[in-house]
Length: 255
Ligand code: BT5
View (spheres, rainbow, N blue to C red):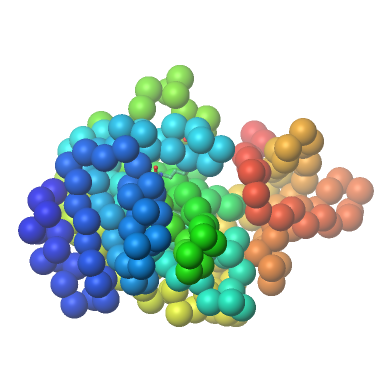
């Protein structure tokens, strides 16, 4: 992946500025700083590898050089927009790009992972900042090359890569460009019925027995879908349905 190749591939799709690094701490940190300086919506930070890539709650996210895709997009939320939905925007855009470009049966694991065959191929970290003008930085990590995932003892959920699922080499610049195109397209639809319908229709584990771990408590039940606020609906054994808000939540199927 080279800077010139990336800029050429992204030309004309609505990205106003790109910063590319062969190595960086975290693309989210660079994007948050850049946003403070006033860079416009859809400014993009891309890195070949991260030395301090992070997931939620400062968990580690591994981006191996020449294998993974790590990038962060600067977004400027409007006053009426629900911030938790920006994470879903990332999930929807990655899901649709993977379906259209690579014909993969991709699903969204609520709230912020993208799965192929029930394995994580992409993690998403949305971070907001209200210091200057309101900002959401949407950080996306995609496992592209077969060597992009860490060892199993570093994983909290089974993982896979695009090349493992497709069985042929994947051009990282192509994957990046197709995801960014979908991000720009779905950005306009954030929170609409179309947005919520797509999310519901591509939700992993719908109709299945799942366990949701919230801070200090576990809920088990059948995953029914998402409501208009983006809350997960879980039907418990006693028949009552409860809504789980986005936050630090872990969801997994029960075998
Ligand atoms: C996430 O967190 O999945 C969000 C990851 C976001 C990464 C992007 S890359 C660009 C931008 N810059 C950043 O610094 N971050 C964003 P979470 O759900 O908390 O999952 C983290 C967990 O996933 C770790 O604790 C590991 O168990 C596992 N993990 C780490 N690297 C992985 C990988 N490459 N593939 C699959 N799982 C991984």
